[in-house]
Image 1: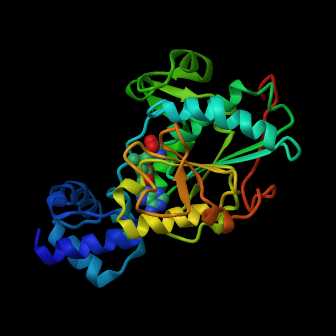
Image 2 (image 1 turned 120 degrees about the horizontal axis):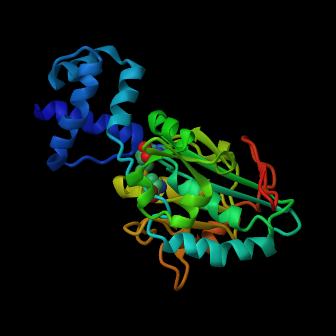
Image 3 (image 1 turned 180 degrees about the horizontal axis):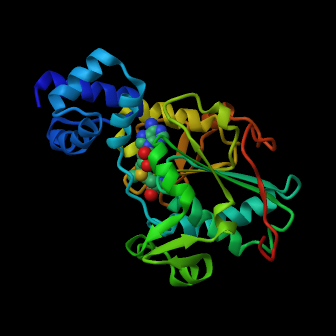
Length: 296
Ligand SMILES: C[S@@+](CC[C@H](N)C(=O)[O-])C[C@H]1O[C@@H](n2cnc3c(N)ncnc32)[C@H](O)[C@@H]1O
């Protein structure tokens, strides 16, 4: 690929999704964008670069951006954050939100849905305690294509073998041919929405818990800070943020600090809490599910 074409794609991707692509990743650009070029009736990346420069076609730009996202995910990824949510955060919320009986959770780069569905399954286990509560799990991603897969809730044998405890597979999935389909009661607990983390986060409303895992790792410092500072405004002073194992707030923002002894979990600092509002009982969009003890 010509150096100025590489730079053009590099800039485009940073601007549209936050993805930072170093020179040594040129092979990735080639392998992922050639199919986009072919689907558009173009023969090569040279032709694709010309099309981008001359046509300014939004559909094409979106296809390029989506093709370059990494959608790797798995149920209960890294397990510990989900155990931590179940054993520490959820019991705390059950006490602190007892008068509102309302909890909002955001899976901020949900990919094919394993993250928000893992949270649904945990909440389903606690249905007896949550009877009468309004629980909302909002799951967003930049990629419309991956969101379609997430909404469908259909996974391969390989995907359900990675991290999903066997009792959850038996309890919450039906086998259809060589695929596994998630039961509707778990699917209905999640509201999916296309959303770019680089934009204004306020239309999503406030959240008690945010999972923003394994996405900031692809961003530069400036965009990491922008997203983290944005999230700090969307959670109440006692809200929590989960980041991926290779991600941190340290050296990026002073709005969050690590929760002592809980790897990957972050809370607001006094400065961060200063810019946050108290829990929003009113979501600005989406539906809420009421968890009935016996399932719905
Ligand atoms: C590696 S997956 C992480 C999925 C899940 N959070 C996990 O930890 O398993 C990263 C996801 O971030 C999404 N993504 C990348 N840039 C984004 C942006 N600017 N806004 C929203 N989502 C983005 C990608 O489409 C992809 O699905």
